[in-house]
Length: 291
Figure 1 (cartoon, rainbow, N blue to C red):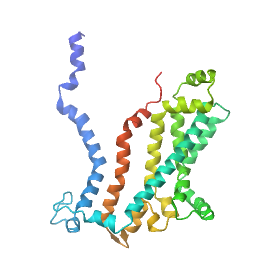
Figure 2 (figure 1 turned 90 degrees about the vertical axis):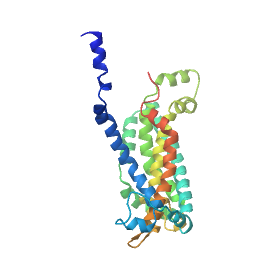
Figure 3 (figure 1 turned 180 degrees about the vertical axis):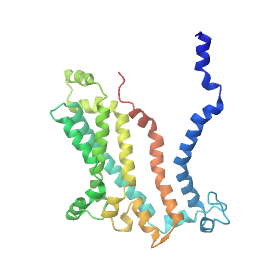
Figure 4 (figure 1 turned 180 degrees about the horizontal axis):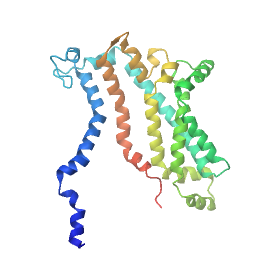
């Protein structure tokens, strides 16, 4: 086959736009629609008056005729939502930093120190992540009560790492595995200690992996429901997931406008976090150092 024929075969995908539309743009459009529609629905319900929300015969359920901010006012003024937001931030940030510190130390020890049985230790840590929180919260509740931590942020800060550390450790183990051993061996020859190697070599090279683990840990802490529902009782100490469900539902009456406003505002910090660190998250999926 001639060179001209090879080029024509290689450029066939540019000749048919309908075919490219069906193979690329249409599937991507469906994915984007299904991913963003919940956020659109929350935004519509947040700014839609109750009259439009419940009367579908006169008003379109997917559009707003007379926007209002009454639901946001009700959420911020008549409830403890600002306190819920502050509690969620404190718990999520604190538990994320504790989990990352423990996970970095554990993952480095398992993957880089090469001691006997390290693989089994890593497997045991990962199996700990597979234990459902619905089973763990029963013994953890007894411990929280005995220590006098019930109905406080400290109860969540100390219990969230029980499911964050196994996952972050497993994620960082795979990332540390991609860093060449020769870098640490050269540092050891030059007289560096293990702590210096971890701080000055391993952590800078694994920064995308650490950030990726931190994003996952922060997201899981932000959205956690079972522990927060079990260990927190007073309204002012609740987190957003628990406060929105327990305080904005009166019997069988759901305040949908305020609920959607709480969900929409509560999702903003997570969206901002992902938007700022998406490059690190993507690079974490490809490994630390290219051979």
